[in-house]
Length: 239
Image 1 (cartoon, rainbow, N blue to C red):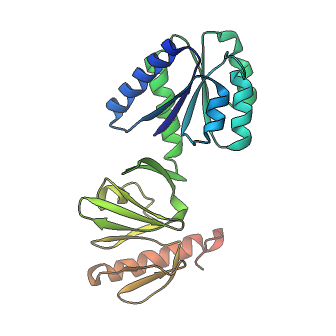
Image 2 (image 1 turned 45 degrees about the vertical axis):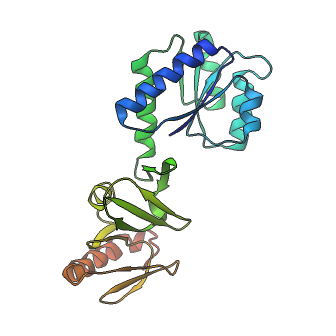
Image 3 (image 1 turned 135 degrees about the vertical axis):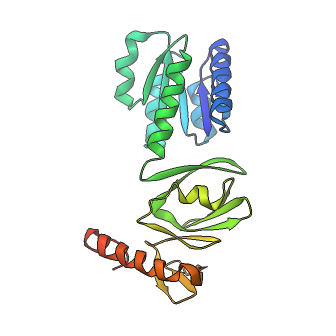
């Protein structure tokens, strides 16, 4: 998870840094923290973050002005305000703040805010995974298939491939069972992107392929037919 801390008082930034590292250790999550002492440097960095922790009162651009500029660049960005001025809490919601945390920051409230954010991201629309480069958020509808790579796995999406640090069985438990199927000991297929299949191979609408095991074939056919019947009247891609 990539996090920015934007605060012109280093003592508060350091305290938040320590709490964020503690959160990462407690949740077994890689948390990559970047520090900015003003809003201008944060915006000019051009970096993208999962969460920006924003101080309200800073020299130059204040937190509200900085948040407006961030929202213009990344409308779906998550901003959590942190401030000793609790009377400004309502003002922060004008710029779609996700939460407001009073200084000194309460650890339990901080942890809950991040937990709530991650739970929302890991909804029916997105999943969060660890990769070599940190953590990524993958839209479920963009997953074409998942392939086993020993104790790791590779998720093939419409845009790119991602190697993640969990096995195929663990991924399967996090995918909706009516839209995905374990078609081979080394593959999980999405039904949404199937263009055609025979007894051994699935071809997808991006021209990639995966394999069907003979042991899974009959159940795969039944499950795919059930998917078509269930979603054909709901705008499913495969009719």
